[in-house]
Image 1 (cartoon, one colour):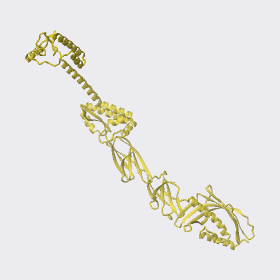
Image 2 (image 1 turned 135 degrees about the vertical axis):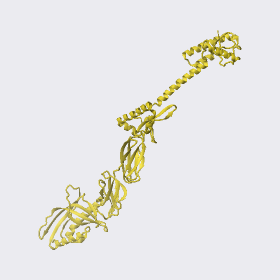
Image 3 (image 1 turned 180 degrees about the vertical axis):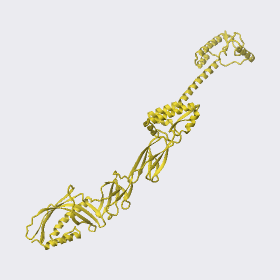
Image 4 (image 1 turned 45 degrees about the vertical axis):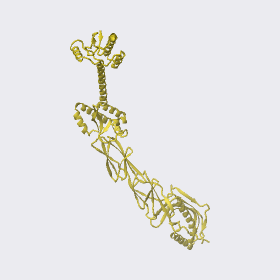
Length: 539
């Protein structure tokens, strides 16, 4: 038996052409016929066996090459006969087997169909509505901000990133019922796209009453694209002071250019946001913070950033004697002279801030202690400094020594630190005692000063200081030939002093009853060697 080496069809041993494919066989060597026949038979058997097992057609090609089979067809010298032969074969007898080339092409085509089908299934899975919704829900539950940001799309220009989705995620995490409602809404939209795509698309384009929607967004190749789209929300921010910075997540989004400032800000992702208003001036920084949630695209939420500041008036308990008074707030120089600007604000009047004052006095610069700003009016109360207190103490001690000298001599020149009015009254009394032979003997022991009673004021007649004391003497007064007996005498005495700017010293201007010294903090003075004096007219 012999087979055509071109198509594998069975032919007679002496055939001049193939009755199956029409190829001319007359030029082939008869010496190789048996070998060629054996090779063809082997080839056909292998091809048929491989086809049955659906092996890789490329292996088949390698095997055919191994047996030296020529793939180049020989042009028929008798096309008419070739055609008749083909016609006869197709008309009756055994059907011809597929050629190697046909089998290869069919195998490749089948593989391509499988690959295309698999690719379609993969693409369809990747763009599946349900898959996107499932992935979104999982990311929300895990608070995976990166995945949520990647899945979300916006109907308007909204910045979507890991930071901006935080408020969005936190809101749904803290409100599980809202999370369930959102996911149910998305899944219902997905079903609507399956049952009524046109209606779903129309609804998706106009469903702005929902914060989150499933929206069809064109195609990728043959697949429909779907986005989880968020509708933007806006806020109306209000603040009450000019030059106030309004911030969100540390970024300034607006600055007020007037008092009672209002502005719409956005668009933002739906969510919960914390807005901050900051007002700064040279001496204070005030802030207000407000948290606001908006998930309604049709509603602009109001954010009230009212800064709790007050206008405080600063004044003096007296109205004369100073050219300027510096205001210090929280220990820092505010640059404000309260004699030129007494109202200051906004500042806090809840006691959390302090005020102090500094001014130049005839005897030097003085500064008050810090006092809390806890009302709408704060008074600058200058109290005597340690230096001033010491000067007043020294004056009072010296006055008591001079007093004994004056009342025992009736000599006004003994006084150096008393006003003319005081000197006149004391000398007049001393002269009266001298004329009536009324005698005095005594010595100055010391004085206690109430450290909390030092005050300074000026009501238009000069600077006045006051202090309460307790003075100590050993003394006695008598007439005629009585024998004096010194006894301790203690008096509560209040002193008023004025400052003589020409002589640059304090002088005693008035001596009267002093306040109670009970439970007072005492500054004590005692004479080391008290000097005893007696009326000069005692003989």
